[in-house]
Image (cartoon, rainbow, N blue to C red; front, side, top):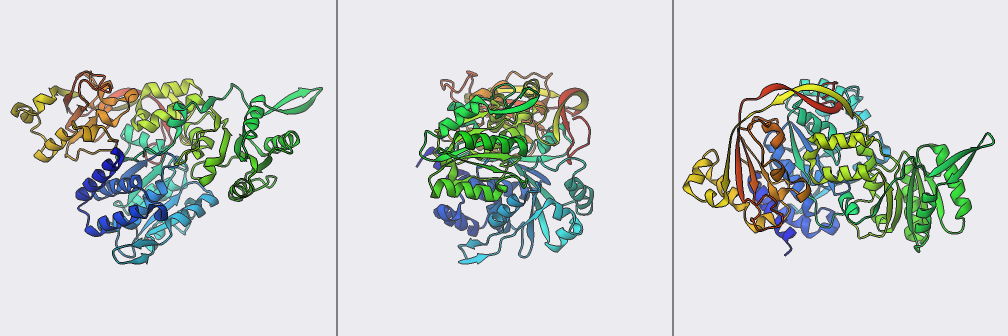
Length: 587
């Protein structure tokens, strides 16, 4: 078995024990994984669903599920709602989960209905059963005739909010529907926000506006995302002022021409027997003109199609993707697809990803849409490594850092670099500003380092008297190669009042254990552990051996940090979050 197989076997077993799950859930997990090609559910989605289920069982009201684009979030929610939550008694017969599509996108809504509302197979009873998920558009949730009636009619126990950065401002219908009404009438109802870029809820967690439990999605070895594209050198930085279609004024008239880089990329497509190239244009008028020029220049070499919501486009979004799929997969053609405000979060190109030859994404002012647009649609589980992508490399490098370590969202230097690169926002309602605001500060009362050898002594155990024996032995297990040589992101210590950081949970570039190792009693406990919860102890764990190249600290052991009483101090930040989770002020 591979290291990853060993990891997910052990992780699933541990999570089932923590959930005190019945045998029926284990049986359905085994059956689902044995039939993954039919079910479309894989180990990472099972682990994600179990982690979220544990968070729900522990009573968290606001939960954020952060997972890479096209990594299987829908499958995670499907398994969570139909297998995990009913098995652990959170969802009973005739109760349901409401899945709200925040974007008012009919195609995405229909896609979610197909995936999440389909019947599921219970291998224990041998029967097909109705899905516990009810999919609803944001607008319908708000006007049906009111959100409270929706929750009562469907006996909703949990609301899942898809693509959290959309419709989340104080003026949004969800803010009014959920927080202003539902949480007031039903204070115990739970919210799960699902996105690759949930900056809105993460900012609320960081500033302390609300208590959020963040669940990080497992990233399987076969997943190919933005981090991997950058590593493989597939992304070319977009030239300053670039537009796919150029325009010049000649004798008082506008003369259009194709940008040389656009020509270069279309020529790359034409070196293949078949395939797809995607170009984003800012409006329909420009897209139609670019189509005219490309058809004129490449009449016999490729087909050019415009998709968007305007009647002048060749197809709508959903119909256009189907047409492109037929042209490439069934007729072996080369297609240039020009998109106008389309092909964003949630759109799945499916098996066409194997045939993608290039993408041109000019958007570079907002992190979420710049990453989730054309680039994000190329992410997923495929073997295509022979494509060209032109986009804002700086923006994508920052997204890749977030993808590897979501807590970097709170790093002031990371934010400043984005701001200085002319990126003006993280998402629709989470924008950069230059301001100051008061905030919480948790002082450090005591710091005690212990080597691994000291951990094994009676004195070392005494220093850790605030944890029980199970947690103590679990801590020692972190120093075994069977733990640190596999993906350990998302591992939970499961000890009341204690939070930990483990070196093997981070990559070398952003290892937060080593970056925070030299902390002093003048530092903020909350910044070191990115927790605004009242933890009494934090433990930094350097679990690599001293002679391991990954151990840049030259120390194997732990550092115990005891927190003091939270204080109110002035602090600087540069994010304004008009979020439903907090106040409509600079945060």
